[in-house]
Figure: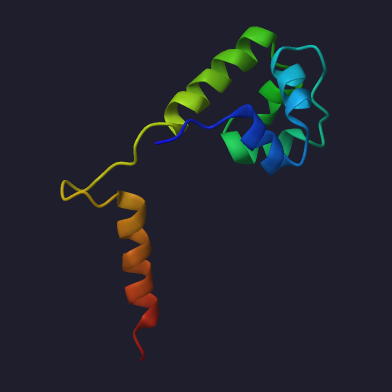
Length: 97
């Protein structure tokens, strides 16, 4: 599985990659209006984005990147769990009453 990048998260958040890098390295503060988007994309608490130290942001980012680049869990037959859940939902939604 491909590793998630700062560039990709920045693009998804609607900001420049260099700005996200500056936030992560505490060269710039994270605007409170941006923190909820970053929290939604990364799972890193918005309080960390706004008030966290450089070390805290970096540690949380590293945990996020490492968890995001792990292969998806499988059911033992090679089917990833998220795909299996989608298939189940589609089957349940497609039956006519």
